[in-house]
Length: 287
Image: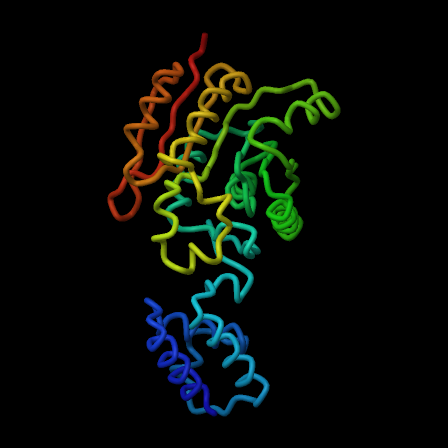
């Protein structure tokens, strides 16, 4: 089959499977299998592809038609201009989360100490380290399998970050006693699980069936992890340190109230590209 014929086959199969971006995904999978770029279809669409390429392309199309996320098939996702490995043990980095990183970067100074809770693939803390100078980054996740991915991403990017396994702040106690006497951070960032348990079954199958429930389930009202992090964070923050979260689109005011009640100041909510609340930032008092 020619390049164009393969593309048309893939697009038709994905349309039949009701994949929302069938034409885009068919093209991206073809580029992934054939090691080409987006110009190949326009300039050399009539070129024959090998039988092996055709076989592998059909296999990947079948996976995508079964609603396996594109990123799980290719094994990577671009985030903040960097390429991150992902798999079924991590959330797929999304464009909305770049807003969290961008707001963190506006508050990040050279040499700061960063803590990333629920780090997953490590994309948040590693992006902050990539685009700053002499900062120290620690990522924590309850999933050891997710941390394996985060460590691989750090190695690929040539970044020096520490990743600890455990529930929120709990791994810090042993790490601090063994490695350093400094338990305070200049910035804490987190994209915690924030979807209400009752909503998870209604999510699109790519998310519901293929992304880790541990990274999605924010318990009954979706606010469980915000409450816990906000309550415990001040003990690990320097005076004037920043706390930033990604939030669900209807959680801004609730999380703001939690932060206000805990004494955080200068609390701001930032919207995503669709105009929904997506990030909240606050600062620990200087006294």
